[in-house]
Length: 304
Figure (tube, rainbow, N blue to C red):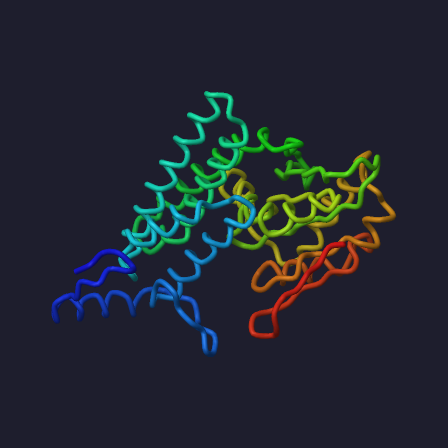
């Protein structure tokens, strides 16, 4: 039986029956009406790998390597997908380390982003492998690469600590490419399974290129706050965002007036959107909030 997504070798009848049973009984995401599949019949696999390809727009993926990795994955086999992603992440991380040792800053930065993307994808497949320890292991490898990459940005990404109910929420501050002393700020709110890399790819990369500063953070139930601080989700998310906004508006480079009028949550679907709607209550500094939900239209966002 062919193991690649694009393999042409036909399985035997017995193998096909076993694979069909294995695939259809695994967790998957719902298919939209008229949705086309490009690589996998299992929509969870399709979603993760298409997301990996999408990161290439801001140098967060090597398209050729992603396509090669896709062919190493057996459709519906979570262990196959996890192993392929970890191997690709390890290869990219080694490339990044060698580039950094040689003084090739931009090459190292990009390769660290590639490694993060592969490790991030591995997290999505880890649960299906039956080994719950793999989730935390893949997250740690992804986070290590992120922390090694932030000093390689121009300007460097600043790691911050936001006071929150007796602890510090870990966050990151991206300075916009602007000569202005004070710049408008976008606060990027993640979802239940996103990473700092996602916030760079899905918002900060485009915003900083247009002169916006950006701030993102891991709140209760997210990333570092969950894995390292054991902080779980809370329904009143406005009580998480309020100290974040207070912290942000206290920074010397933030245009408070511009941030009040322009700060918005990136239109999105899923859990991020729900957290952003909660953020749209108090505080009044965080207006307007924009969010969209699945199957209610295509999210759109343009920064001037």
